[in-house]
Image 1: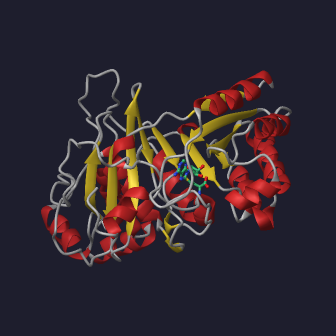
Image 2 (image 1 turned 120 degrees about the vertical axis):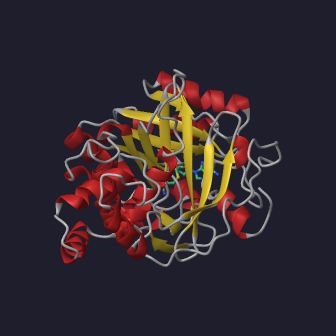
Length: 374
Ligand code: SAH
């Protein structure tokens, strides 16, 4: 249903050129790049210049890196690709949400989304090809997980989305660069924590994308040991925990990994995260009509969170073709909101962004992979 509205973009693949076999420059470890440069008689400072050109300078070819010697630009282009991935599909919704299906060097596909409103430009990035968590309502995990994304692939998504922002914009609703990151695309971010922290570190750098840790939100199904690791990173990232149910019995039906973990361990780790970082935790709750949105669920959820300094994000389910769930009825959603608010919990209902372009996790990739028109 969500893909039937007219698009501003044709939705056709942007290029059918064969994939570059060369490694993406953002995936080349700094030490290796330094050594490569040294072999060509180039000083170590070139590493910073090259990375700055891609990350901060919006260069899309080595040729355009005008602060590098001409010969070096040619040699770089012979050995590396500036982007290891290419845009397979690019959709733009009426609200200026951009959704990209990106084809990786190994031909796998992921999704990345740019959401623009209120003077912010928010990148939503994927962390894995597929997802291993198997949440029953989600399109991303229908075929399991294939692999983690590399640090370079994580960064490239940000760069590709940033390049869609207009640096000259005078529209107060738009931002001239990326202002926020939500790690809420395909995959389980905490299952790829090392690469993610690496990429976000670069993204936060003043020679990188200049996105401060407080403007980054990492969403997890709830892996307690990794939540603690994230807290120990000493960074001020925001944590969002996908709760989706107020008790273990129901949560295990909706989020199968809960069977092994249990909610107590997740809530305890999230409490520790708050104590250590001072960052209020957000609990995400996908509202599935008739399944987790009844009065008893509302009261139980309120009881669970009232003593915690928590924020709740209610996400009415986005339809995924072939799955037997439905969106909540207005009255049930309102009761949920009122019950949580009465318990002193701050609640927001997630706005639908780019609904007509399948902006929910993993839906568009599925269509592209199965050859359906988007
Ligand atoms: N693996 C991470 C990131 C998932 S995407 C996690 O579990 O948090 C971010 C949020 O979108 C999660 O809360 C996820 O459960 C939710 N989500 C996934 N598919 C959805 C759908 N079809 N409708 C509404 N929310 C969905």
